[in-house]
Length: 426
Image (cartoon, rainbow, N blue to C red):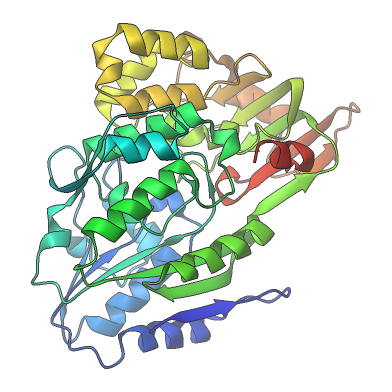
């Protein structure tokens, strides 16, 4: 059964309508054991936490329900984060952490010839297709992959089979797809479907995932006045549902500007953003809107480290955000970067290549640490005296001293771009 719900007006899909759709998605199925794959708290505004809790309450009385957040390389969720994301009805004992280094099994390989074809000759390595072993456990009658479709720096549009192959994937797939996207160019991909990385994931699904009893539950959301609005819900296995979600997200989550931004101020909610690995969404999602020689100030009260993974954190501290050409040079000369391509890709993504300045305003990292990886530093307490996120509105603001800034309260929910630049990079 395919379910497609959209709200094009100012209204949103109600929780009653949502619950009815979720019930229809499992109606008539003989279920004894179900695995749900939601995102983690870094997708706090995805509606996936509520959807997971609804499924849990719906199914718990007649089947076993396991919940494995699609962490990718992120830290496992704490009990408090699970409570924040899923609510009180989902017991912490039902949450299973995914370990991208240890918990996966290879189920196939995307050949080098195909990777070379989709990357226009830029990359010619094969990519092993690895997934968490639980997805291959045939005692599960149904696997429900829940997540948000939104512009993304690595794959173009987040979710769908990315939730499986990256969120629940392993070392080769995560590293090699990230590097493929970085070399191809994220500005050519963000906000678009059928990117080289997406084509690799589609190939893997078509060749190696057909026998798994999987359905996708895809959302499109917006946030207005701190309230999350569900604008689209798409349930099923067919790719056309993802394409519908992409089209809706392009309408709801792409913000085109009439003029480039001279100074952007981006706030990172400390519940979601604890590392620059995540916090650099402030860089990715604004870089197509910021003027040459412009400024980006990132208000990051929760950022306390660079990588989510300890090994990647060390690599970021070692090499820093020094620009695409320098990282490619370091990659060719150093085995530790060759063995951690996602880190190399992230370092490329997180630099402006000198086109605009990037300042992190933090309170849990020192000046030496921040400047050591190539960013400018400002104490958070100093930054919010002038740029208080509670007093700014999303979009252009004129401050008391006459300075014009563009404020973004959550970079995870959109992509900001000069429309001519977006079309030029297509």
